[in-house]
Image (cartoon, rainbow, N blue to C red; front, side):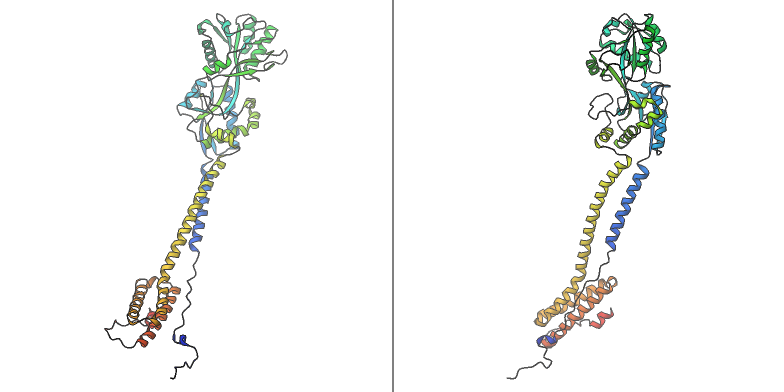
Amino acid sequence: MLQDTDPTGAGPEAGRPERPVLRPPRRRPWGRLLIVVGGLLLAAGGFALAHFWSPHANLRVTTGPQGGAAQRFMAAFVSVAAIQHPRVHLELVPVPDLAASAKALEDGRTDLAIVRSDAAAPANGQTIVILRRDVVAFVLPPHSKISSVAGLSGKTVGIAAGPVQANNVQALDTLLSFFDIPAKDVGRVILPVAELGQAVQQKKVAAVFAVGPMAPGEVVDVVAAVARATKGTPGILALDEAETIAKRFPGFESVDVPVGAFRARPATPSDTVTTLAVTYRFAASELMSDVVAGAIARSILTTKAKLMAATPLANQIEAPDPDDKSPILPIHPGVAAYLSGGDQSFLDQFQRYFYVIGIGISVAGSVFALASSYWNRRRSDEDWRPIRRLVEIADEAPGAERSAFESLEHETQAIASSVLGRQGGAVGAERLAAFSTALAHARHALDARRAALGPRTGPSTGPMPSPALVAAQ
């Protein structure tokens, strides 16, 4: 028996059309580039917002009593703040006394106020910084026999005239009430400091009630006046009950006055004395944001040297204790955070916020990029699925029986109608070229198999589109 031979020597695969090599179209990275550019623009907008919005502040501040230490400090602070923070505008609100200053803050008519801890402290006030700590002192003439506050009953007390004399009278009444001494049982005479010494020397007053710092101030001046007038060494009345008084009246605090705090030679006091103190505080409303409160505290504490150049009162400025739990003028949370966390400013805080926001943007951008990549990959797979199926049809056609062959022909026609009819106007040139190649490849395989199977015995399924028509479309 003679065997059929292949004159070309190419073997049985020579009649099968060559399988096309299909390469997906190159993707342009426009989507990823737009994501990156959008993220950069958003971050730039955020930092621009921090720059143009966060440093701005319009703050209303009380001036304190006319001619008092508080008013002089505020004048110095405003001048320094204008240089250090030109974008922070301080609007001064004049008030007649410390009680009015506290009331203005409590009523929301000011954002900041100078208040004294024992003088009707505002219920909504919180401490920014402590401006000064004033000792409450009973200055006694030399060789006085008065050893306690109770010994003042039935006697007259001198009080230095000045902007805060009413607050000092109130403080005296508070102390007398602790010792159950009616206010009417203690006489008062208000005189200028220079005249108080003469009043003591003439025994018109048994003691002088003074409130001032352990530095140049009212107590030092009173001690000097009494010493000059009496030619002796004044004494300071000890308040052994100071700690208990401070617990009952939180506006006061216990303090130890060291030897010679008010006069060096002869030393006054001659021994360490326990008494009371009140504090002048720069207070803000509890509604003030932590960022602003921390920035104000930072501004005052870091410019103390410049404030001292403007007024000696600034040398007594101190930071409040972050752990202070006093119900009277507690420390503002923003100041506590600043003191605990170190140096920071408006922009430092907002940079932290935008750092967190930036992390969120970065995460969101990554999620968007992954979703976009997944969507593009899925869309690409859907676009290339008909092309891969045409290649599979070309591979299945040479061995298909008639029924399977007819099914492949119908499927090929359906794929061609779907791709060229439904998406023909939106198909890219590269994908259309790949699809035309795959369709021609499948048609060639089907035509070869139809010739091998012979004429149809059943009804015709209709003509198939020719590769030339497909290419033309």
